[in-house]
Length: 191
Image (cartoon, rainbow, N blue to C red; front, side):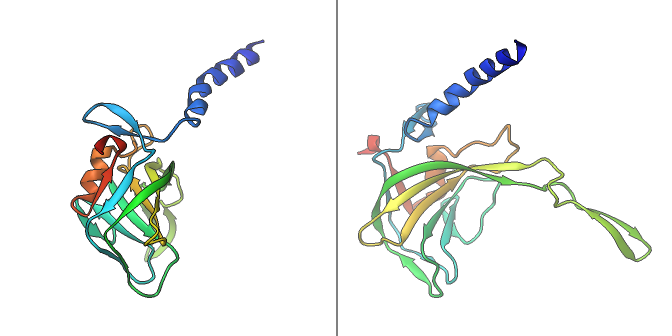
């Protein structure tokens, strides 16, 4: 009998999580303290950015373009496909967001590297095996569409890398701060 009670309680706990998958993807707007649906949004790219050769993305963080990021701060990346051996400019444009989903990116082995040595020879190493507490980044994947630039595929925005209990998706304001003057995420309420 007790096993059935635990199963029932587990189902009750899981129901809101399962039902949330049926609704639209939302982003927290900290100015109104509400979650706003992403449906009907647009990404307006105001300045040309260049994807380097043999890469498929360029990063935005703190309003600047870069080719790497500080994972402990919110950031975004503009992605293209397929990979090319030539630099690829992405021109100013208006991209509709035709799909949106969330994804969690685990980062393991953040513990210190420990070595034991006998004389001048290392005999054992530790760290990098997932032994330490893992950290997570929560990402929004926003599928982009433009008839003029069909190779531009996604705007991917991540929150700060943190312990699982404290990791969060980026807010609308954090995404806008990451993009800076390069691009604007236009919500349906902004029009």
